[in-house]
Amino acid sequence: MRSEVKSTKNYKEHQRVIAELSITDIIHVVDYVNLLSLFLNRNNETLDNKDTILEPLNKVIERLRTDENCRHNDCDSDLYKSDLPQYDYVCSSCDENF
Image (cartoon, rainbow, N blue to C red; front, top):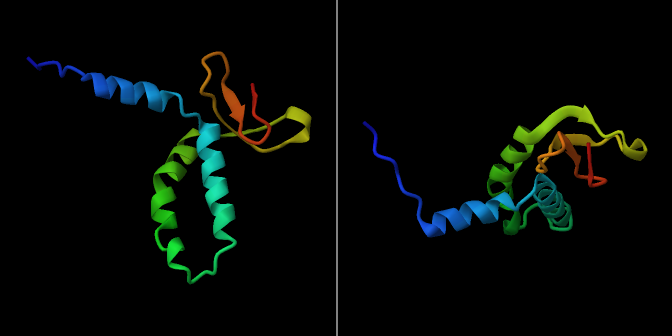
């Protein structure tokens, strides 16, 4: 018989806060970091760990990316699994849900 692990108050708060982070938020952060990195010299040590730092976020993006494309105003961007229960998809470019 397995004993059930009781969740701490801090763990429950951690889960609640993380649940408020959307795929659109994650995509915008990754895009912003990648854009900023273009302004640095390629030999700048600030870029040394960029890929490692972004790796967990990129994994989330890939796991939530779908084969569908946005149909809103000819956007045609990738659609992601929605973070809203009433929708299947969300577009990070036009912030539209489908």
